[in-house]
Image (tube, rainbow, N blue to C red; front, side, top):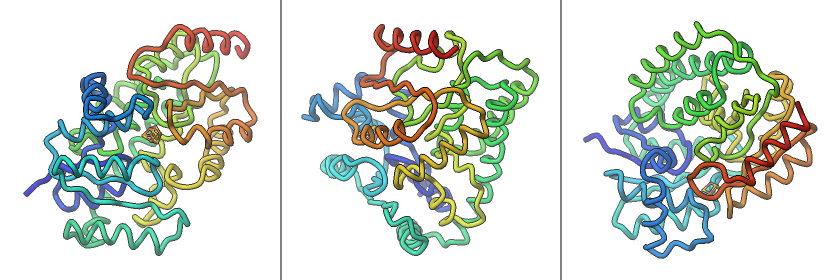
Length: 324
Ligand code: SF4
């Protein structure tokens, strides 16, 4: 029987697809459905006001998405994940825990992926076969990324959407691939966009509705979406364990910093927009990024899924005035 399996951040979806199931990234559901209602519903259940909106959104999205099971990433993601998973379990939805071991060692991660495979009754060969197919789509996402930073034919907002949706390939990789091919064909025929400020975006995906559009209106363009690119697994490793070891997001911020510095050079970026979510522990990691990134750095904080507030727009405008 095909199951719909929710999850709280990127994990080896190859295993789920190999088992014939449908992975559902709860973050994407939260942001594309009635997000305000999801937050409200969670608060009615007692989730505190002073808790990250993504957690409340993931909770309500899990209950509203006709799921058969939810996998929580209890190591290597959010400090709230374990408690979120317990709350979901209280609603009688079966749960499963997955960890990205913090020592970032092959054997430890291999064990975690093997446990996942055992749970869903698939062999490593089956996971690898599925990985080879997903990698053929990921190669097209690399083309899309090059069209963004090298050819300037793909907007930062478009880059963000395609890459962020690669976390689960929207539950239907074949349809995703068809749409991606169509998009690439059209983008290839565009004229390059003029850009006054080449920007990188670092941090979790923004909860703001119009951040990328506002940046484009001000004359800048996001040519590097750090975490979204990680969700798209751009390293194309031959081995599934290696792939999820290269994935920087679950491990030390220093791994993220190395990746960011490398991409700043490759993409010839002028400045960085950092994003942090209100009430998120990753704000501390962001302090380290700001300290070690040697470019103008504007940090924005969002709380609710809504348009940019006037103060944030003013900060963006001032940043552009100084750096263009
Ligand atoms: S934004 Fe931070 S606190 Fe919120 S779910 Fe993501 S990691 Fe957790």
